Length: 428
Image (tube, rainbow, N blue to C red; front, side):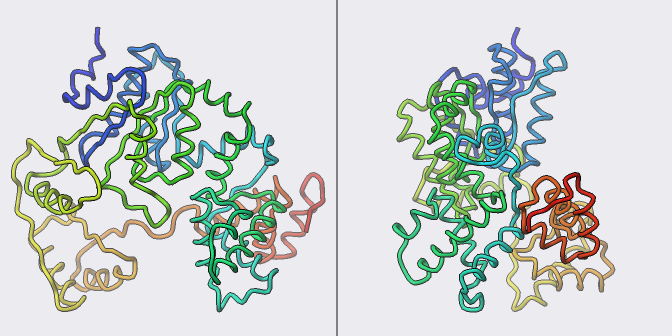
């Protein structure tokens, strides 16, 4: 008897979910139920095909999406199956295999992971060590260049040979010193996780075979947002069984500024000529008028295949546009429009955080209640970073960035902490 939830899928969703072995590309338009298709496919492989859940790898781009997928899969397979596929981000997966097998390429299992602020602090230290003026060469610019290089799998030794120019020469010097410091601190930045994850699978045949053998099915979401490192990871992990499902949409690629390349969707077709392609174009989220407008905008793009979204929903209200003479006129239009709307069902979107101030001031003046979504992320809050610095230094006394942060909190407090540590010793 077929699983009940299979009956609720539309024709294209069902075709994707029940596909057999081999490479599969699902081109899924916005609101077409791609998360549903991906989680149902994982559940189908477990429930209908009897696949061991631990031999399925499900990768997405955010921890939030991974958590949502985990809950969906758990619900679909039922309580009688207690084991789940591994579900998480590319970065989390690479961090995991580096912790387990990274010693094969000289990585200590106790490595700490530096966030953006930690990485920037280390870049500044590298520049200071090299006597490079950070007023002439901005640390953030150099950091962005190093990040872009890592996403293209260009390490510090190759950088100078491949990238030319005055700035590139400076970036190359900082890159080498930055990596030296990271190694000294036994730390990796986010980009290292991907680059070294690829290096591990590339340089250790034993480790590569271990994971290639383990994962019979690899399911990857948001494939239009993958960069070169993530694409190579896909190829390495699926080398033996060639069973993978990639879900993506050329038109939803928004992360080119951080190395994402929507052309990876086409690259799959080149590297896997027998790939099956399923297009999901029925939209469950929007009205016909919204889809018509979206289709007209998307249709102008001639660089990739276009999905033509459609819906069974009603036409809905027509889209209105307003062009103000300045930001004050725009804000007044927003306030006036809100008078006829239910605040609870209304969202105001703005392009940059700097634009929120004038909108907030206008809402306060008009007595309109609002909730600001976003702001400082939890792990970026000062008190949280302070706590994490203590914990990271506790397990890795070579972590100079955390040590310097603790020094700023208070040298006497740090001295007590150092003396309290079981070894009572530290590396300065």
